[in-house]
Image (cartoon, rainbow, N blue to C red; front, side):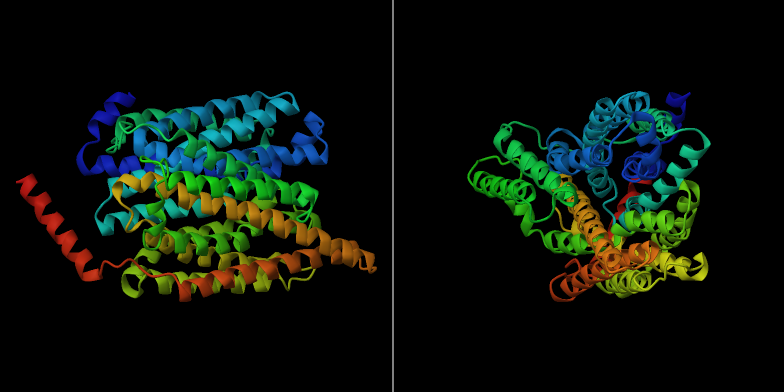
Length: 495
């Protein structure tokens, strides 16, 4: 049946159906970054986790995902992006089965690490596949819109899905649900996705560079995600963080000298890629903490259950989706990506400032509903311009590596935001409680400070946008001419 279906989908339709397929796989992996959060209490009861060990259910996934993105992206350039996407999909799906069947702490944590590895391998290929499959500017804008919606809305969708599955069945099903999706995505992807040109390994593989980059990222992400447990100025955090920085230094030295580097340093000179990654870092540091802090605020201050918490984030997701799937691309055509990005960043700053002023006892509508909608609008206006600027001038042969850089900047910044702002909120809560405030008031005060700092981080991103970030150098007239030329070529081919 699947073979017949894929054989019927040909020509232009194949590319668009392939877009849906890779985005379905990407969504499954993005969901797993947050879908677990609402199920953690159930896992703790069933498997007897201590509070410290429970954190590893989330941390293992984040460490593996963040560590292997650069290597996976480059392997896609060398060996084929379709191949790497399908390999990552199989690893992720098999690990999901192991997570769902886990009856002990070690099995679940180990399977979550493998899940993160598979997610990194597949995710690093997705953006590169879109860039190479949709070279025409208008089509690429549509494809990027779908991709950015998946990336930026997956967190809130995961909260809702996790709440529904945990309350309706059990926490095991937040992993089992990946199996039919993974199988369908693999079968359709194998038949519909076109393999990209690959650089090959004729010049050899830079094993030293690959190991240094991966180990440095692993130590760095580990230091970040465990900083809230050990303290930001503890010997543990400073030691692992310093080791990561030292390894990165050795990595740069090695890559600048080898004949065929795994990570050619020229990629950092691509206009827009480095600057957009910095802006994305500040944006994600400030905004993505909203998912964790928002969940804690709704559950601990307002007493929401898992399902109600997921539903509370639905307006954010809907607002983001409405803008991502069309309007933002049209606004970029009219005003340019930088101006649209600035509008989105300002909306996110305003939303975080509003959240930082919420009292402990307040109705969901309009006090919480309003900022959540504003956050969704800001994200819908921000992520597509950032991704477009990042990938606009990347050479086709380096698209996988650039995709890894884009994803790594997102994942590492999210880890920093969650760890740092979570620590700030907890410490502020302790101080206020020590001053005699009611526990709910003290808890709310902790969230207020974290959201205020998050707004400051996004404001820094807006400042970097004004001072450093530049839109793609190719003018709108050139883009229009390119589209017209390609349309003529397609017409001639059809004739």
